[in-house]
Image (cartoon, rainbow, N blue to C red; front, side):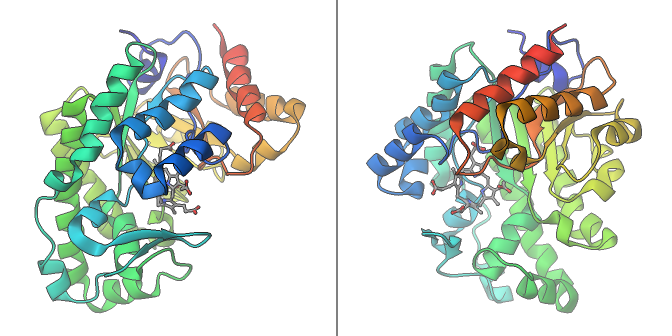
Length: 344
Ligand code: CP3
């Protein structure tokens, strides 16, 4: 099977610019909200392979998307490590038992795949449902981003606790990040064995670090993951996405990854000139464009497409996840515009 999404990642010829959208299965779709209600709550939905498959397929059935992404969450690993993940309405993810001490870090089990079989069952269930319609993206969070939630106990604006640990007890934080990197490698390995065609690592909070700390505490562990997964699956493309990581794209693209995700604060043409022949670029329409009229959405899509000069190596996406209050009709406008304007 030849997919434009995989070909673009490997910088092989494509028929048109492929597109998928972060959080494409999610609350902006009424059918998603109905399935989540049936499951009871978000984590019950993630833990039910049949229902996770159903919501993964919902955007694929509705729009002409070039890839499906496993319906799950990055916080499955810390949940399996015993931290007690829950979602409180309007406040995002929370942990009952956040990481506070060295003893907490030492107590984390080295291997958690046994408690994540629901994810791997989800991957194989989705893979059969997809057939040859589209490739499947597996994913995980970056060690740094997972650690922010594990140490802060949930979302944070200041990252006070994890940054205090970074400066006061750097070796302690490194121990946690290394354990997480090993778990992520085993997790992604098992996703590929279950049928994932490509992988993405979400580093939502790498951009809050200074340059050197980003390299030492975030990118270094993503580098370890790329090397570890590539040793087992040299042909599975890997995309790294550090939100607000526009200043680090040179270093990110030197990790051996195949694709770099970019948010909308950088200009696609500049990024391409900086790193373009080394790796593919995924992005980067401002998610807020999805609140505009269909005409404006089409014009903004064209601007992004025009910035990219290469023949291949661009995967269209938003610069971050689609928001819950977007009109699903605008998603169709987006997907169709990308295909129409980029057809060769
Ligand atoms: O992209 C996809 O369609 C695949 C599924 C996916 C989800 N989360 C589903 C989800 C992926 C790839 C993620 C990754 C994820 N989860 C990240 C990294 C990407 C990013 O957004 O920066 C992070 C930081 C998380 C942790 C997390 N999970 C947060 C901050 C939230 C939002 C809480 C809120 O109320 O807005 C979640 C919940 C979540 N994950 C939802 C979905 C569809 C919404 C849950 C719901 O249905 O209420």
